[in-house]
Length: 321
Image 1 (cartoon, rainbow, N blue to C red):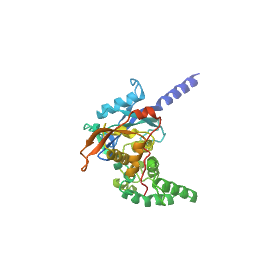
Image 2: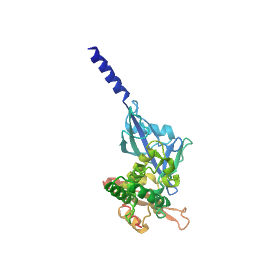
Image 3: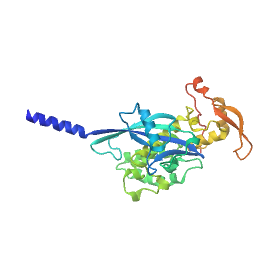
Image 4: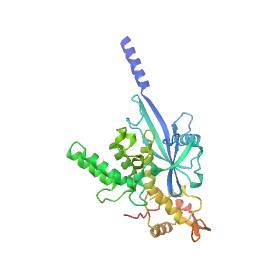
């Protein structure tokens, strides 16, 4: 009986040591001066986050509380993004399971002035290979030979082929088309190849930040990549881009915002035709003088479109290079 009691106490103690921590984390995005921005806190390498507490009425209310406390920025549109619970997550201790429930939050341009304790920065600082608005970025060309060398270093022919194919698809090698929605796959491939700082390999083998991007704490850059991929996909079939726009805007401002998010240029006539055909916007009767040329008509989002159709979006007419 004594041995059984001792065993039970050891079992209970062991279970207590295996703690589960649940955090709420936010990818807060905005578009400012044609740049897609993300909100960070601390040393500018951390997404707003905090533990889910018993006092929180819900996951969303808990997230909103933490973001407002840490940044002074109230959230508007949010949606759940993904739950990260890998056992080997960066920073996880062996006796703990760290679970992060992430959310994507969108805010309007005029609201992005942040207090000193938080910072807005272009997400292309973290992913310099993702911005193709001026053609293929230099970072992409510098990463290519390193990825090919990593593919060749696999232990057998099958693994070498598999690595080579994954790199070609994700990074558009061998005249393959660039798919802007593969932002997460590209970051994870660079992590696997130890070409980003978070991978924890030999720092001398990691390219400069201008090529490999700015590092973030723990796996926050992976979470940010997940948010970028979600938003790039969603703007094609839901009008979420209007959550990032001022109440009134020109069609050119709308196009530039979509291009900033996608990291791709859009055919101007096709874009305007699709926006008008889908009746996403309506004229306000006013004009803008901020164009540097002729006054441009101001538009606003037709909120009635959400009631008229269950699924609607911009269907990006991307210019393929």
